[in-house]
Length: 394
Ligand SMILES: *Cc1c(COP(=O)(O)O)cnc(C)c1O
Image 1 (cartoon, rainbow, N blue to C red):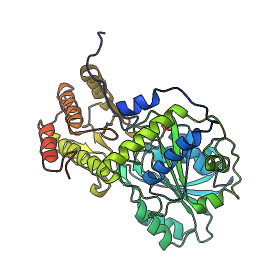
Image 2: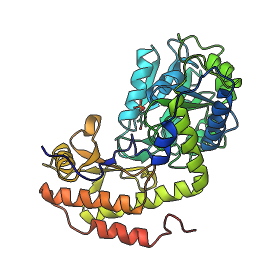
Image 3: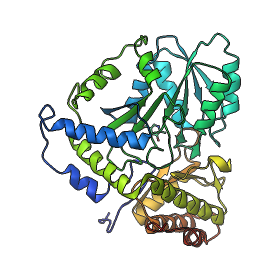
């Protein structure tokens, strides 16, 4: 096979494109993580993350992928045999539940059809039935990356409060943080878990956790075994700007730069940009005559778009064609929608022309793969983008 020329289009919903500024910030000599200058780096990163999580409470950073923060959330707050309520929004909802089960937690799963976000009323009803308050935590994936469905976290908080239930609210914001609005303190979330390789525009390798005072208090009574993930040793060392073990120093240089970039753009504009790209992509899908995996309009994600293949057409064969022909990687269908769904990532460091090029590759790829679609998706997306403010306007 000959060498592919030009850019590789990495249109996954994570890992996302690492901007040049971030790559260059990482390309510098490692410094002593116990040296006198290190606390300044830690503090800059933590303070920037506090603004991104929109919290005044504790933010911690592990050298890990997002899955590490999933585990940390559970082992720091719960004890063997504790009951937790999980929501089957899609593959990531199931994945977090599987971690809980491996630790001997008793998982009740609110069933879902993988076509919408978690249902606040269902959560409220389930908690009302738990008069003895056995359920210790409600876990929700904010942006379910396998289905492109967003769950209404503020409404879920309100539902827990209406049921007058003391369970902790834990939210996976791995693919929503720094892409769509997430308000840790205002929404009353206890634990939020995130990773570096999605909206934060970094390679994988840092896991972030925002912890409420109530969740931090719960850690004193939690009896699940933990060592590497212990919040207390991380918090105590971080207070002085240091880490209990070797931090991912290069990634922290990158994080400092990525946070600066987010602040230069302004979080509100970052969210507005993702919203424009989300609606333009949905306009394209609708013009092609294809179906979105997420059918509930209010829940449709602006971070990625999950598209269903018509019956008899294989999403993975289409993705292979797009990779070979256009040097573009699209996200695969996960779990029970494998082969049935493909996913277009439009998050992170991204602009209108990158989106349009992506959609050109998808449209041509669909035609070449013999999928019965209408043309005109790219044009529909262009019209949508022309009708709303551009990257630097407003
Ligand atoms: C990517 C992702 C994860 C897993 O994160 P890793 O960094 O791959 O461990 C968890 N939850 C959601 C919603 C994700 O999108």
